[in-house]
Image (cartoon, rainbow, N blue to C red; front, side, top):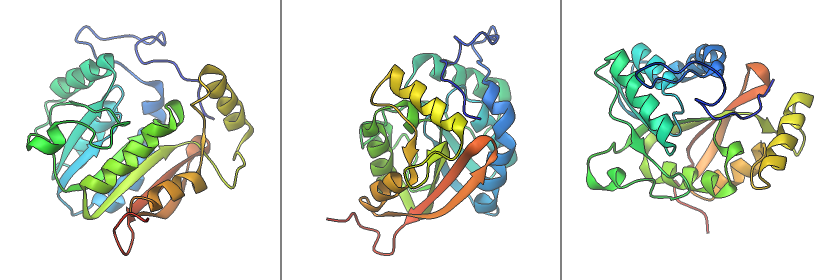
Length: 231
């Protein structure tokens, strides 16, 4: 069941003295998400960027289970960036890089992606529960950046609730969608077909739609055969 949006740190859950925030959803979804990611990452090495890391708990969990992969957390919210830094320090894992402030509405994402201080030729991009609580231009920027920075065999993993063929997959998601649009008309649960068309426009193709618990999906994208944006 999709949850109503409450900003991390303002949801009544405890905040650690070092700034670590705790997301209730992390405790429910990290295991099934990792079950999907690990199938692709097994035996591979390289850089993986998490776009919209939130509290930072997911990237710590993934890094602990994939020590040969270098993980790059990111977010736009200052409180989230502080929490990511605190979780990184608390975990003490050598394969997590410092958090980056990324504006996904900008196709370039952030200066570090161009100046050599950030990752390059990404093995994967993982993004959870972002594009439905943001304007559509954020989805556009996410896909444009992924197309720009993914290596030839790289993949984009997009987790969250989605509609299929214009219809919600559960009543709870319909209620959730209404609540989002009431809060901001530019928000809302996106349709898989619309997201797939967006991907095609930047040279990416939807290759898998993986059902997840609580009426969510992981959409998996890779470069299309031509690998170039369509006209």
